[in-house]
Image (cartoon, rainbow, N blue to C red; front, top):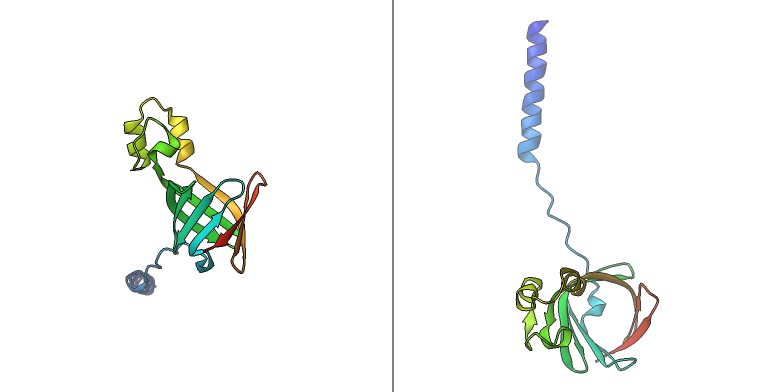
Length: 150
């Protein structure tokens, strides 16, 4: 009986090792981006604003000046944007006219509070829909803006 138990334990150990050794790790899921967003989208109401989407990256301009850039993902009709860089002069007059990361902003603009900087480098969601060459974005506060694809 003892020999049978040892045999079963050994067999289970071999099967377990084989399963562990043969198991392939699943690659991490890739963020989803809607290819229909790719391109340049412009609006003039209420403010001249441009979005340039490109396979998960986004760059914006306001009044034809750089504003922010970052990354985006989509899920169904939800657009999630994370700001990774801001254009200095647009966001704070004490900054130079160049792109800043969060760390660079903190280092260059020591008079700004942590809360201000964290607010600028935020992740936010909007609902979106595309109908032909029209992009409609609706913020969480309910403000809707319509863009036209160039």
